[in-house]
Image (cartoon, rainbow, N blue to C red):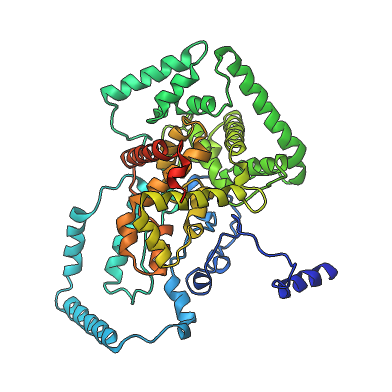
Length: 485
């Protein structure tokens, strides 16, 4: 009771001088007061899902059941209805126009009910190419919604497509991809020659990996570029065996003692073990929301060694125990190597992210002053949208296939995840300058920047983004005074 009353005291006295104030961090992302009450959905209520006795065994189920604390809710309009007193009533002209539209649509549907069917028949000719099964499902859902509700309710917020986690999982290089070109075959052969040499030339491997790594050799290439595997061919097998045994020694020592019941390995169980052991070994930061995203690319890439089809609906229980253990251990060590270079992003108060967001603001102010002044005009702080870009390395903004391609280059660049990522974020922001300048209010800008339409992006878009980021780095990295006022 004493502890509980103490907590209540601090809640009541949060603004007293000397009291503990909330720190902007991954678990408490910075929010503007104007968004807190009206525009952000109560995740604890909206994401309340009934408990299932069966654990998720496929990526599809895992993604569907995983709470995404970063996504903006889909029913903000319902939240507005609960606080309608803070909004002005609709203009009478708008109401009359809406009523007239309802009557017109109703009369058309009664006069010609077959129009809905003909509209459905014509719809595929105007649709974009669907690149994955998850995108096809999204397209079907949106089409059915259009037929069921010909007139949408009055739009209070600008609707932006949110990238579902399932759509981020599909790899465009999975089975069903078009046959390789002569150039791609030549690149693949060069990679195989480098990887099969007695001592792999890591500098040459980085040079070849910058424009992308072929799917067939990506797992071993990532192990080498991350520093997990040695360049010497003879030492690799022993190193893998030793590091995998070391990881499961940690599991036996720290994790298994906390679970009495026998469990079957699932995606959720594997990720939980990886994150738990990392938090135990890094007490300065512990687990911070967002680190879980950084496991996914490694896990998917290493899983692709043993799975030909898309991993989206693959059941990990079909793999042998030894294979699953290898994938889990390799994902842990490679993620640890990545986080070693950006750990200040996840320590107390997350100083690494604070510095990177400030550097991004200074950089954008020099390369595109019009966009920078547009943000200042409508009081948009860079921390309100770029915090997630730095914390999750753009994983919440891009499909997973694009993240994997992006990480090919990050691992080829010196300090790619910590330094080059800044210029990628700047290029990514300027990419949307037209859409940004078209928005003329705080709410519209935040909704755009938090839900950028990248669901159909592929290697071509990522290649252009990286080329622009490299140009910015070449101009500003060695001359920081260029973007300091």
